[in-house]
Amino acid sequence: MDKKEIIKELDIVALLEDLPGKHLSKGTIGTIVHVYENNFYEIEFADLNGQAYALLTLSAEKLLLLKHDPVIA
Image (cartoon, rainbow, N blue to C red):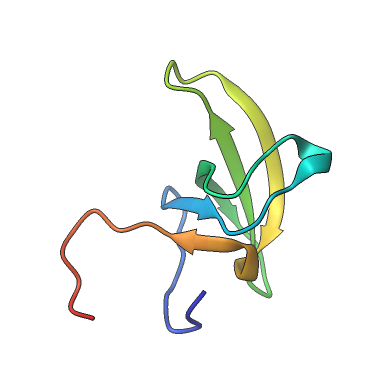
């Protein structure tokens, strides 16, 4: 992830790699629920009904910040 991007609580992110030990695959979407120091984040993964199925702490390098608004590249 670009170091200039700032991830905040409630931002939506996608995994950039498979996490087979956690049964999560690249592209899985989650919500940031807590921001830690040194670019680590607690992410909740939930289904379309809002039922959480995973809660992990991951580094920014494993995440892609998703954007809903137009951004000038």
